[in-house]
Length: 67
Image (cartoon, rainbow, N blue to C red; front, side, top):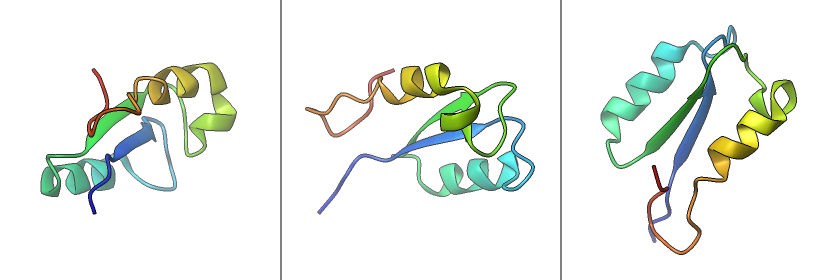
């Protein structure tokens, strides 16, 4: 079974470096990413409006998030 994957990552994350997320994305080009500037490890709490905007791009009727 396949499911869409959306990686949401804060650019200022000090716990999980951005390079780790980008490395995973290089191995999985079918995954989509939304990078949130000036946000750390918990974007849904640090910038809920921007997190919701990033996640809200996911079209639940398709296999891929919309750009």
